[in-house]
Image (cartoon, rainbow, N blue to C red):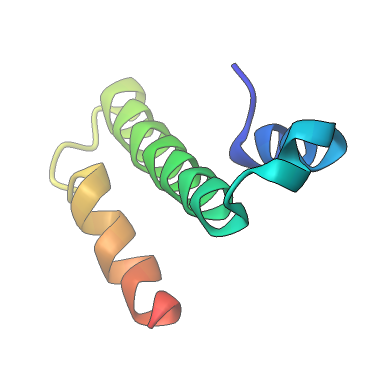
Length: 69
């Protein structure tokens, strides 16, 4: 699986990027990054058994939502 950054760089390197809506490509990369952060957090909870921790979605919102605005 590619990271959001790897995917975005790949998009920048294609000639098709010139003809696509750049903001939609950037927004897709941001959504991919969000999903990867949430999934990684949830996987860490599962692997460590630290179930008293929040879930990935809540962690993402608490950590990154205030930064995006």
